[in-house]
Image (cartoon, rainbow, N blue to C red):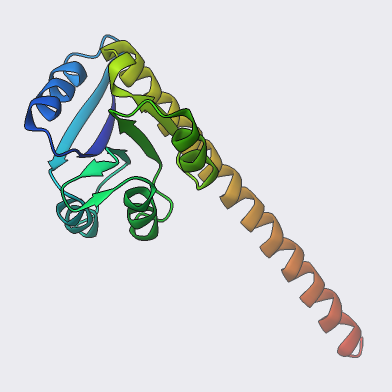
Length: 160
């Protein structure tokens, strides 16, 4: 069973409870561990503790609003996939957030338990795939660099 640790940054305790209920008992056997922060500051503090696989972020928080909320999280959550979960179903804002690196944008009014769980699983899979690809490319680049260095050393050191 796969376990995903989610940080939900959401100011509504009612909505946080709803998300928690939606994530319990996933029929696809993913275990979701949910940590809730009710403000941007609390979310940033929780991020510093580590152990988060993915962030669900409401853009309307008591201490931050709109795209600035996403940009503040992005600055501290380098490499962590983030899904915007907003009460504002604003297509232009969604596009801006995704252009700025958010993985997805879900409007709260149209969100269902199935949609949320599927989006979380797919985002985690894409993120893992991207990390694997980056590691493979880095390994390939290191091997090529070592080959070049060995080639230079062979030419520089006289053969006996």
